[in-house]
Length: 151
Length: 151
DNA sequence: GCAGAAAACTTGAGAGTTCAAGTAATGCGA
DNA sequence: TCGCATTACTTGAACTCTCAAGTTTTCTGC
Image 1 (cartoon, rainbow over the protein chains, first blue to last red):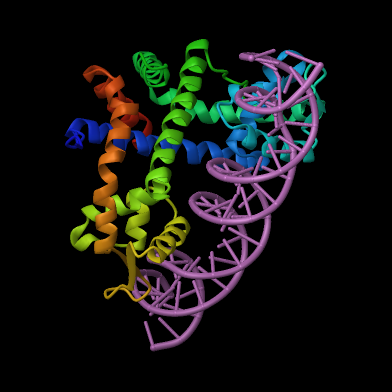
Image 2: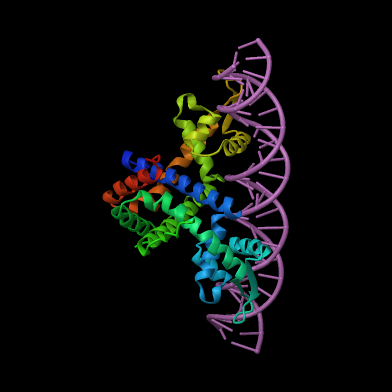
């Protein structure tokens, strides 16, 4: 027995396509801005940002994967690329010999400091300049509903 | 003179990170579902879907790029891959000899018919089952605000 | 205290995207 | 109507991401 398909209503379809349009628009703009400014994909920027907020600007690889909501494999490749630029330093973990840590270097921190204003400005221009305070609250509410674990 | 950076407020930062979390969650789930069911990335599914809605299930390449909100280059590569699967057929445009059209084949349409229910179910489960009617309206409103051309 | 399972990474291959450059046809201004 | 900019598309290379497989520790149950 297969359930009959529960197609989207007109409102749902409009919202879904709006979601996709927003997604493409914001992602491509953010990516392009970081690419132009630093040749850096957004995911790599997020790694730098998360490291910058961590104690000693250092995180375990697995923890870095968690906070950036991505796979260990991706982190492994990305950290290698960032290490090649001299922005991140990898080291074996002292507490678990399977593990490795990634640390933001001074040069990586300097790059982030230089990049952050343009990035924030882009986020603001693309999103927050366009939303009312009520819409910002609503957005947070919606993203929470979609992201929270199943009931 | 460089403007002082207008950093995000706590609410804005929370909304932005919520947005990123939603994005990752939804994108990876949708992509994985289509990948498992048909070895198809979401962008390719969108091409099939847009073609299926077009007259004669046919669109110019440039028009296909517009409606899927992506680059001509990507469309060109993607259509080639879909043509290799026999799901899309390319042909020179009759009205403009620079142009080409892409048409959904019967086999491509059949694939879409088979795929659509699972895809819709995933969209529903990930998004609309989790949002109230008011939230759905708010989402559409937010995406419109972010996507609409500058004032 | 010893397998066997699980965890933490890494690696390499395959696939998709982007970017820059190239080709061919069309539009337009003088 | 000639020349030049523009449009429409393709292509190849570089890069990122995903997926599966492999290595090395650590954990767990007996």
